Amino acid sequence: MDVLYFAWMRERIGLPRETVETTAGTVMELVEELKAREDRYAMAFSDISALRVAVDQELTDFDAPLTGVREVAFFPPMTGG
Image (cartoon, rainbow, N blue to C red):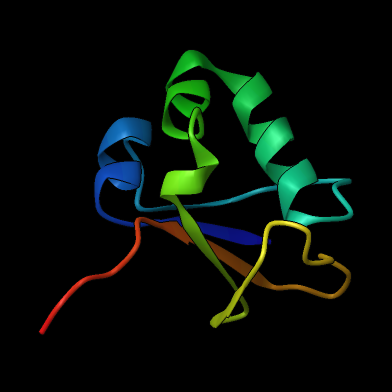
């Protein structure tokens, strides 16, 4: 599946996107797999309360299932006016 990183997530990880082979059943399990890769991932995902996630371009929670998912995107909360 494709994993996309936006804003400071992209800066900390050093990639805007990557293709990931995973056995994760939920977004949170994917996060744990990514955190175990390298320190830069562990740092980027150290406080998931500061993150939002979209699965196949729909906002969701970290307990969302990944069955059949093609894309997961991580980004900080959006603000604007």
